[in-house]
Image 1 (cartoon, helix red, strand yellow):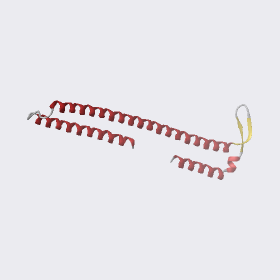
Image 2 (cartoon, rainbow, N blue to C red):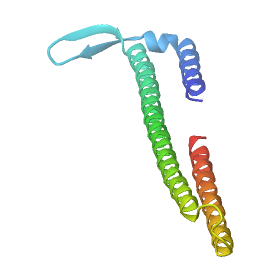
Image 3 (cartoon, rainbow, N blue to C red):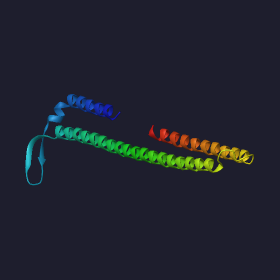
Length: 150
């Protein structure tokens, strides 16, 4: 978009210069304080200065946009690193839970009698609830990161 605007400005300036070339090339007396020039095409100098300023601002805006994109990319990298860290933490918690469950099963042992049935069902229900909660949390984190990365 900026390129199109710059091209339009340059084309309009060239058309203006072609249509008014005699006025732009008319000689003027130019005084810089310590030296005086006669026959200087002041209109042409001003037109070229305006075009130069337009180019400077065009490139300045491009550099600003690149800086913003670099900041955005850095933020996205940081967010991805945070997501990986959170996934690792959840994985370690899941491993701790698995270790705890294995210990509980070993403690229950084979053939502990009728009392192990309800306790085992309660433990399985707790495991299922924790697994669902973990899956929901991971899905929410994934959805959030996907929305932010777009």
